[in-house]
Image (cartoon, rainbow, N blue to C red; front, side, top):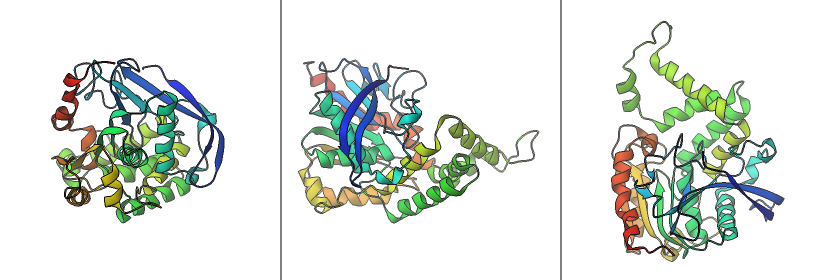
Length: 331
């Protein structure tokens, strides 16, 4: 694993009014050294972390030397959402999770970037929760990003998302085995009936009196339990419902018009969580007022998780954006 770096932010005030005397922000850096190349920020999803390239990383198919996001030409930065537990320090876990919002996380990430003396970004990219944070980062600093790439996400929490966040929160706060049980429910949001049915075909697990689909779900639950903290799950889940770049601001069109970045919306046609129709409507809203907005769609039977499965399609969609590195001279 690449080295984990730490930035200490002093006296950070959350939207809720809570004040933090000190906040630890952990990150990893990949590729060209800071100050020598354009910077790409990669935001992780709900159970992800800053390990986005290299061994045992979750986006290694996309990020690395000679890959779509080519670390020969870019500096790739990935921050850990505070409280996600990836630093392994119990004192950095967050219990008062309802005090936090996606806007707070985006502000924290920008504070980290400013600490590193980075004021402009070639791209901000993220899937699911990470993509929602990317939208908010663009709203906060509308002239500081060249390419905004939100994948399998939305600029606001729909009623469907809010409802499922509530179910997850109820499980996490009331179950005897909360991480496992919440993960069982979540996995069915992240996949589709078509994907599940085609994969398991009602087969039973050899030597066990359960169906293969049951065994698969339970294994996912225990795998997450073995690497994820309950407080982290509660926080990441809660953040999803705080997503709304228009909250206490102007209307969506006004905010989007102010964003200098080219906006590349990437949806999954079978996503049952952040549904493609919402992204299509966003594109239709933006196209008359913004020339540099684009809609891309991953075609997959696998649902929301396709952004972690369909790497070939995603690479093909993203390649034209990141191939512009050929026009850059390292500075």
